[in-house]
Length: 55
Image (cartoon, rainbow, N blue to C red; front, side, top):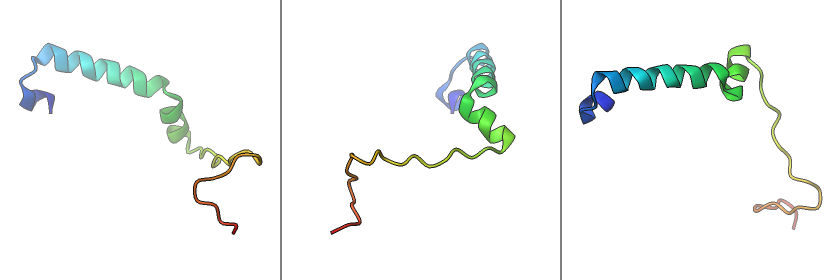
């Protein structure tokens, strides 16, 4: 997309470097590389959900 938008090659290269650094240090990316799955968050007992299953 950046190339199609006409951004200069040095800008695209630097953005790739930054993206690589972010992906390397990101908690999400680290978890994905390790194959770890985060447990689904459950709302606290005193908080109502938007789509309550109880009538």
